[in-house]
Amino acid sequence: MKRMLAGVACAAFAGSSVLFAQVSPPAPAAPVLSAEAANIDAEVDEGLKKLGLDPADVKYVVVSHGHVDHAGGAKFLQDKYGARLVMSAADYDLMERNTPTWRPKRDMIATDGMALTLGDFTMTLYLTPGHTDGTISTVFPVRDGDRRHLVATWGGTSFNFGPIRARLLSYAQQADRFRALTAQAGADVILSNHPGLDGTHARVAALRTRTPGDPHPFVVGNGVMQRYLTAVGQCAQAALEIVSA
Image 1 (tube, rainbow, N blue to C red):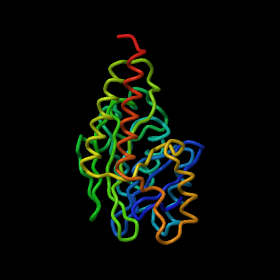
Image 2: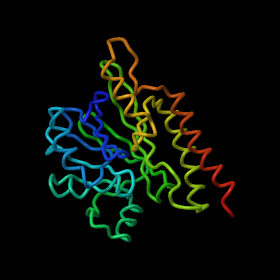
Image 3: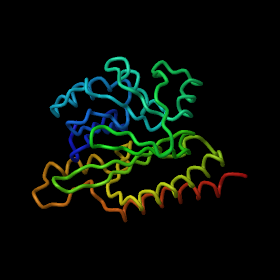
């Protein structure tokens, strides 16, 4: 697990999945996106300890959506640490319909615009249905030394749900809405919940050779944020063009 900015750490594993954890002492640690069940114990227990943090301080787990590579470790965190799980009602329903062995207990229900506050840290949750019916995207502050930045995470990437027009339309509309929200907020850091999609590995490597005064590799500016979310929405619009009405 690597600390990327003051307020966020990253653990990548299994080749594709990533866990982002809010770790801003003295506020309790709060994983933003939970991880695959096969690796969550080692990544949380050992990863947070390597950063000098106690995994028993985990209070909330905010899961972007109910697929195994994002929700699969939530049950472990619930059972071992008593962490509160925050997820949309639609994605609790998704897991209850599919009844996977890793299904966590239904707990806190995320609502659109919900603010989750830990000490002086506040994460804002937005419901952005498309990838799933209850996908959550988030905005939260971090620091680079004395400089404050704002992270935005787009909660669900790819159209792996098939040629469903209503889902594609919602995906496009929510991408446009989240783009407007991040423009107004001035978000300047993009974090994906799949590290291959935002260059996480290369940027973590760049941190190792960063010297004082160098730009932070994760701080890309709001312009890049807007272009990214514009492309996300345009991809959904393009998919709509080839899906029968």
